[in-house]
Image (cartoon, rainbow, N blue to C red; front, side, top):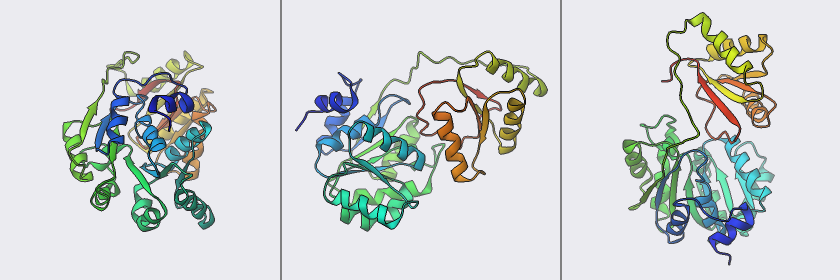
Length: 308
């Protein structure tokens, strides 16, 4: 059996863990519960992926977005790790093949939405020898969190049903009240709370004051045209504003698209994929866009309206 450091080198190509990652991994391997707060890009996923490779059985990873699951599974497979996602868009035959892979121990990580886990609990748990539960984007558990998902609050039954299996809840955004609520809702057992620094020295903030509404979009267009090779996101409060901003950018020849919850799921997925693959420079979006966007070269974010 390879050590955590050996697995880190073999599958991910890193020589050393970042601050607290190794301690979190050891805590999970010991069977204890943890709540992990790390900034975006801080390496949260390794905190459950490495234990999943060491512990016998399959790790169940609860994730809120199908697109996020697909991205993570694709990345794991490209690193030589057997992983799969399980959702309602798959055929019966596809789901059965995944369950068989869990049953024979070849699938080490299974990504699933809270809704699908709730509806197929018995099917999943009969097929899998569960090594650990990882609750990703755990702030969705709390009504105090900004991405509250009611289904997440029901995940606490898993802790009651599987008292000896370690739970690790992970998020990049949770104040003290939200942290307390996550622990309560998930019924975590005396979890150790790991909080790494959120000081991002590579980020800068700028506020434009006194810009008239009609001048605002022109300033944004000038800003983007000065950064022709930089990807960015423009956040708007409404779907209508997203589409208006998109039209203004398109009229100036800027490669942009809009994204909001009123669009067909397949179209939203296409926009996200095009943005990640650098086929789109700019996305004009509501807060429906952003969670789980794994794109390292986003260079700017503009709030077209004041955020909520």
